[in-house]
Image (cartoon, rainbow, N blue to C red; front, side, top):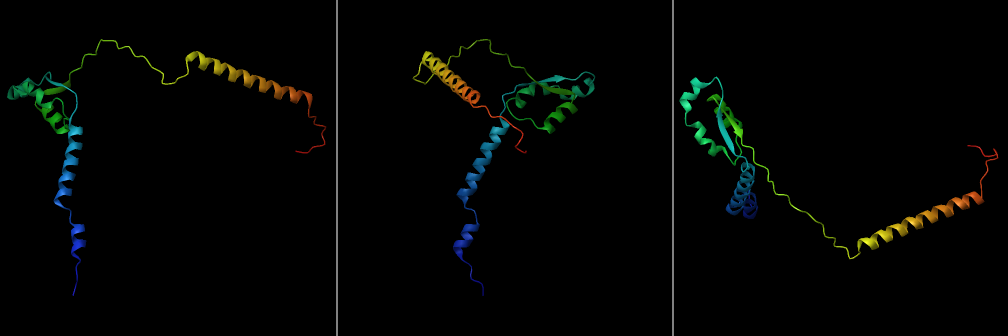
Length: 147
């Protein structure tokens, strides 16, 4: 005789709410993948006029391929019909934006420069002190030390 814990079974079976949230999350991800800011134009390929006669309205449907992810199958089907899917180059914005940085430090630039110079001067004096001490107490190698 097998006794099954009902709570355990409920834990194993996903609830409807969890399934719906998983579907919503995958839909959000798919939407992000599918949305692109590219506009396409369908142009005829030279030398494929015989095939293009069967698909005259295809260039008018370029808007259907814009602003979304276009699969390889869709691209190849357009090529098989004698057309090429080309992205439209977006015009660059010509307006020049002025960017200025505002320091959140309460220290003015003059104070910062003065502090930097003082630190450099302090390091220079310390270096001079160390070198002068080394000059006053030279360590001679008389050859008695073995390396």
